[in-house]
Image (tube, rainbow, N blue to C red; front, side, top):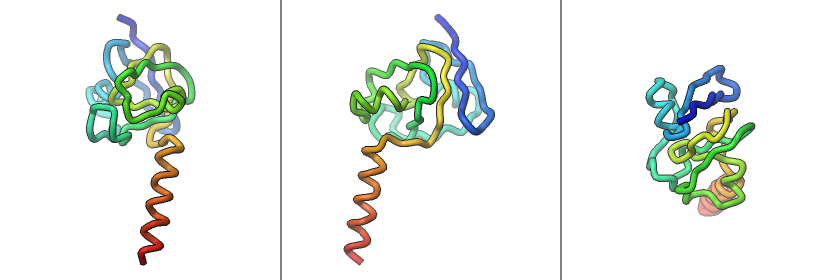
Length: 109
């Protein structure tokens, strides 16, 4: 078992996370307010952009393979190195879906 340092960009928060636990679990243990909802890798509420480092997240079904290279679902992500994560950043496909939904709602008005 190896512990890694996970730093959250722009917040000054830093925690130690074992390679056998998820980033979300460590956040909850340390009292860090990380957003989450489903805890099974589908809803993307816990998404964070990986600024530095590597994670393993084989059960992150809400991300494409390409997105999983750049984004971590903290409920599934286990560190494989020290990390810098930018919380609250979502994959482009999610941002695009939200923009399309907003446009459709505006058309209905």
